[in-house]
Image 1 (cartoon, rainbow, N blue to C red):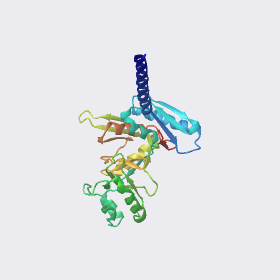
Image 2: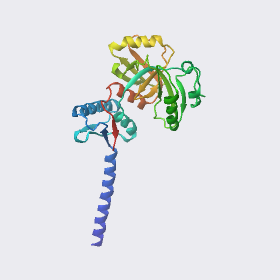
Image 3: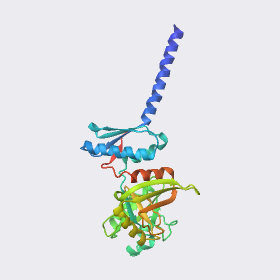
Image 4: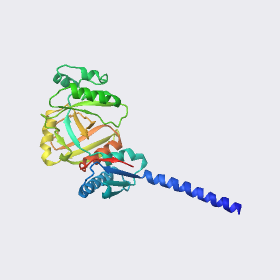
Length: 286
């Protein structure tokens, strides 16, 4: 009897441990996101779910299940691989607004601020050349103070200051972008026809290729023709993700972006660029 009781208790303990591990694994494979708008229409929520599904399909070969929970203004996603969890959360929560700007270099920026170097003194500029598209770099913890200075002291027409991607938790860089006579970006994600990515055969570096829709082809041609050897900043959700140098005029509306990109980075750009912006913002709640 005693042996039977001990065996029974052992079975219960083993079952509880197994159930605990199962629950944890299940939790890790589910992300729940909440819409910022408490009165979002079902059609808008469904459109968001469709965009998210398309992004995930482009990003990974894993099978995902995207479910709309309309009564709570939520979307649930199941099936992600734990190694990609951070990238997946970006695909679910970033609006994916893409913008193209010509970036000022240091010499140009100094001219329009009339030689005032105060902003430069707040940043690390030791590794930044005068022809560089970066104004300077700093730690994330110092960006708030620099933003305060820019908002209160720096008055520059036709210029927008934007930080680089915050995915690097130790260092970010500031860019000064030309705003086309206060009209905003030169082109946006709405002008993009398609985005793909691939890997070079020789150096094995990842690169991105995108093509513009027909109405934007001429605009892109003029932009590249007038800005050979200048940097064009590509901005996603108010963060510069890269600033490649224009090497020649591009007449056919297509472009290849090369650089020190990871596979995840090019996949994210393709997923954002191919499916448009989310109509509403979301945050992860689970």
